Image (cartoon, rainbow, N blue to C red; front, side, top):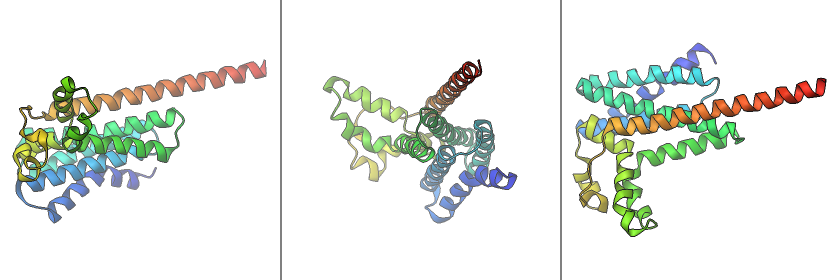
Length: 227
C-alpha cells in the first residue's frame, strides 16, 4: 500500500469527524455526532483493511491521537479528548481483529469485513436494541442484560465521558427507550474502550495463531511430499 493511501486511511476518521462537526448540530450533540462518525470510520478502516495487521495498527495508532486533537479543538477537556481517542481506537481495533479472524476461519474478505462492521454498528447502538432483545432473555436476567449492553455501548459512553451529554435523559431517548427510565448506571468510556479493544486484540491473536497453524500444516505436508 502506498504511503499516500496509508496516510489517507489514517486521516479518514478525523476527516469524518470534522465533516460531522461542520454539517451537524453544535454543542454536545455536535460532538457526539462527530464521535459516532469517527468511530464508524475507524471501524470501516479496520474491517476493510488490506496489507498486514501491523500496518493497519500503525494507521489506527495515528488516527486515534488525531481524533483526540480534533476533540480538543472543539472545546473538550484533555481527559475527554483522551477518552474519545480511546473509543475511536477501540472501534478500529475491534473491527480489525474480527475481520482478521473471519478471514483466518475461511471467510472471504468482503464477508469478514461486513461481519466485523455489523458487530461494530451493534456496539454503537446498544442503547436502542437492548430492550427489544431482552424480551428473549429469561425475566430474572433482563436487568443484568440491559446493563451489560449499556456498559458496552460505545456511542453512549462517548456521550457521557466526551460530549458531556446526559444521553439517557435526552428527549429523543427518554421518551422512547424504556431502558432510559430504569435505574441503570451510565456507561464509562474507559470500560467500553477496554472491552472492545481487548476483543479486537484477542481476535488478532487468534487469527495469527490460525495462520501459523495453517502454515505449519502446509509445511509438514510439503515436507512429506518431498520425502
